[in-house]
Image (cartoon, rainbow, N blue to C red; front, side, top):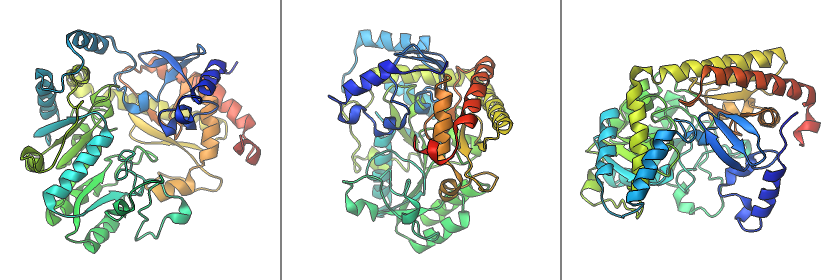
Length: 451
């Protein structure tokens, strides 16, 4: 029998009387049939308040590269908690973490610590403007750089507000944004190097930085086409702009050197989040000494009461040591495991006549659901994604998977953690068999789309 969620439902109804909208992040309201409440996790598994067990491929929105509640990390946090949780001052731990980041990431000549990647993005963009004296930042349509006024410009505009192919809109999805912020961005379509060249030429001498996700994980899990990263680096060098790699998701998932080492490019600044803290609120800005010089001199302000929090540092030190200990096995092993899951999901989709098309590098991937009549082949940019992905149909399949104990992210993203095993993948596919069967039987078009 499919999972039921009466306790989560009751808690959500109770929460709405004290918490605005009942959740502490707006995206959590996307979960159907109700935002779930959890009691505990272990490794690749998660248990909700109703006693339902999940093989978890959401894995803390990608933060839990090491799985749920790894014992060594819990011990490291507990040991530090007995010594102190916050000093608003220095500790040797912060040097040890920074030195590990230097060792792992070739471009990390200097490091500054924060509590979330959203903060780090704001720091990086401020630093880029201070470094160059220029007002504009170039970012790519569909790329996510935190939820602040600057991070979401051009993230997910509706088709009627896209703007032209040559000049994508600079809209922000939230009300209350400072209007002038939008004017400080140039938005470019992903995976079109020639379009990028034209946009840089159009704003020649005005752009401080180009910021991007090395793999567009937040929208469709789109890997860079050949020459994309090289073009960004070339333009930044030629035009005196900073290259900012937002490795919030890709950092350490793609190995000790991140996606930049995996794909072979060297940014000026790197945004690190999620896996760098293993689920604790921890993030870092890393970069070349020359790019960090304005912070070093105190000419660009970077501050925060909780920066370098010792609990977070203890967790991060443990996390980074796990990645270092894996050597060349990582990310090779989780890539293989992810491809096994992708292949199995595609086979189930074909068997049940469901137009599901997994894409991505394996260690993270997206399950695109093709609309009727949509073209086959990889999705390469945000507009192509919106035109071809059947979001309502995916939402129904995702709910079927959830109710069989397979948990993926609502927007179709799947993460493989270091805690997942081949046995987990086999069991997930067995559970998914039931979910696909139910979806194929129930999904009848418009009637189901209204659920």
